[in-house]
Length: 99
Image (cartoon, rainbow, N blue to C red; front, top):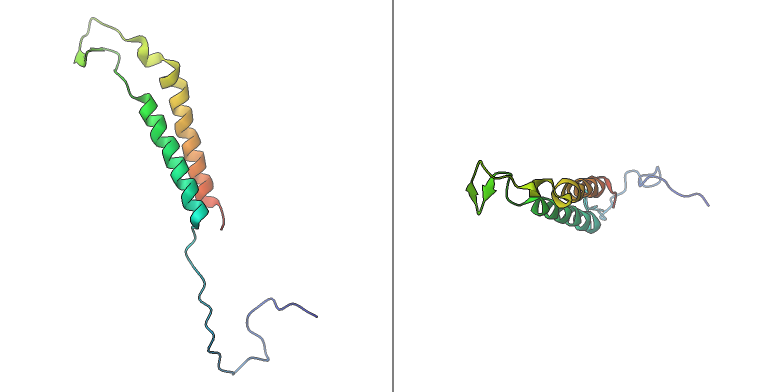
């Protein structure tokens, strides 16, 4: 017994078909949106980890005579950008993932 590969055949040509198959043409499924939200959460957490005072502020005011070494912390230089990059990779995966 052979398997039909298309939905039209010579046997059904000219016959009325009341059955209309309407497929969901939307590309993204539930899993895609779940992965997109996870990726967005990673990006937001990465940017929040980058927050902090800049190099020349003390108590929120600019002071040219002070220097804040906190801008070179591991959290702001290594961990936060890593979270952002991981978030963008997850976003690319979510977009390219098939249903």
